[in-house]
Image (cartoon, rainbow, N blue to C red; front, side, top):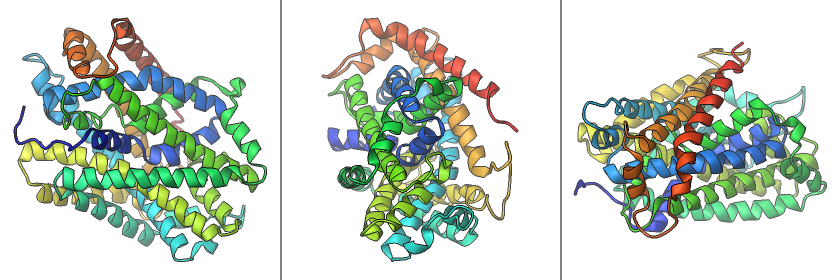
Length: 454
């Protein structure tokens, strides 16, 4: 073990930091709009199944590889693979995946900050969506100045926090952010549930319509499960490398997934009752959260302050993942260069900012339609990450951990089961070794075949 390697100060810090990486825009922005577009409760049901059958095993594998190697995703394969193997190539793709994720995620974080600022300063009246008359979300994403300024804020704040040491910076900030996040969620969830006609939104969200479940829904649910848990690109492995062997990794993974799922479900409980209360369409796509919730709050007594609370919640959720992925990128770069935290943060911050300009200006100055009409740079980066690198990375982790030509099942289980808590049982081996890679490979191919290329 590298004696100079930083470690987290507590188990709570590890759970909240790992959950913070999982909890973010994937839960409170992407999950609701995908649920709306894929038919409501049926998508939610399939998503939860994917979390249990695919997400949980892959999370245990990532944590185990990180803890056993005490290294970042680039270095962990080199420590665990057999001599002459080429598994470590995936470590570089993990770095690519984290960078590509931040090429659009930082821009979405900037959008959250922008809406929070507008509500906080009382400029929220202009954010009302009126079909055929005003679309404030489109007005925002096509404004170059707004996008660049708030992207810069998202990047500077994120890497500014990481300039400090692990326990004093990232761990401390994440603990406070996560506690505030849960408090805000509970308050907003109760408020939304008491709105008139909220029951119709709850039925759409929680009662499955099995006639709407098809192959595309299942592929979308799998990709969303990996996206929301940040699995497949080593984002969880890095936090595994920061903890000791006092607790087994199955139990810790279950805790992280429970927290992540609670936040995702709560986001829907906040949004969908509000949609039906104010007759706002649930299938609005990426604009759902922004146009829907700003319209709802502007029609609600005390809406300015409820909106301020809601978008503060969104900012915390977005930053929790952004900070975790920034830490992953920074750890990989520092491992290869030996740079200090401040120097690495500055260099990584500049690179991420420049790359994210493609998304920030993708609806104005850098127009680009990679796929179907109306697609943009955001869709391109999301395709690279969600459709490709996350499922393929999960497949590689499963093959590496469960087979003799990789790390091997016995080595993986010994690491995963070290410490007290839930264990990986012998009966789980077929799930980890066969079900996960076969299902992921099938759904990945199906997803590419049915993708809306044009």
